[in-house]
Image 1 (tube, rainbow, N blue to C red):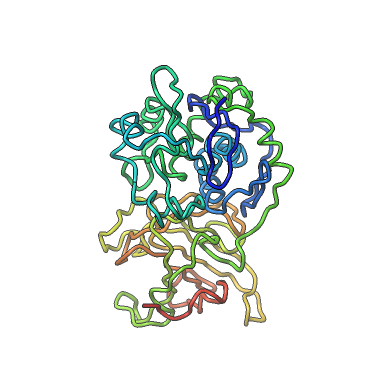
Image 2: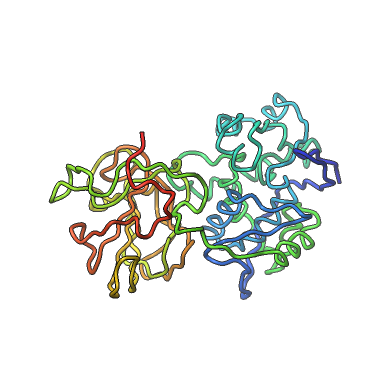
Length: 380
């Protein structure tokens, strides 16, 4: 048991070393929905960006999102922990893993700092446990021992390539999910035992609080980025386009940041999926859409009095999509990550809506499915 200072407060927390991971609820329904939601532990609400990352990790690993959130709350209070370890000491404990940490994301105004609600920045030593376990120190958002992190990372290649970053909430939640899957098998399906092996204290009460306060919430207004950012419009619908039969752009290009999760804005089923396309090569992989997902639904959209089949295209994803062909989706289902694959010059989401056939020449203005605060015209 140790006292961790936390940004803006202090909490008594047992920051256990991650030596076991996620809790798959075998045979039991999860409390989460495709739309994700919000809940609290000890009166502290889960940050929206952390919830989004946990939802994607749950999809990738099969571990209940609320289990991942409960574990990481007890470990680092969803990134609010301030352990006070000097950065030089944390670097020494990280060893070769230090090269994999994106310190720019932790700096003031950085992506990780903003995501966990610490705009002034996060120090490496904030998420470093000064109490050793077997000669090692738990580190990062999910408090992994370096040897455990290396083993789990080696068994699961990172989507999009590159090294897993223990200080990235998205990476840490995903590897925690993979690790907990193994621990759960070792514990014969006993979730509490698996989490104890992970080293997390007082997990049952955290999970109970999260379940009792959880409120599902679809992304407001059909935002394909689920509120992670204020998307910037790069190319409008109908703009001049060099690579279409009629010389017009048949979607709207919007951007959050590379790797941002993209969510379905409608219900329907997955009509098509493409993967295996590299980023930044400006080629026709995936019919020019690169890694992509097409969601088909039958119904009507604003401004149309009749039902039609609609095909919603999410193009240029970073890596393999999170869904498979034929899968049912709902508003808020994670589909993939923003990228730069296919005929793309710069990371963004190509969002297109075709009517009655998946054919770019059958497109309609996709803004009918987007919230009004996403600009319909390109922004400088």
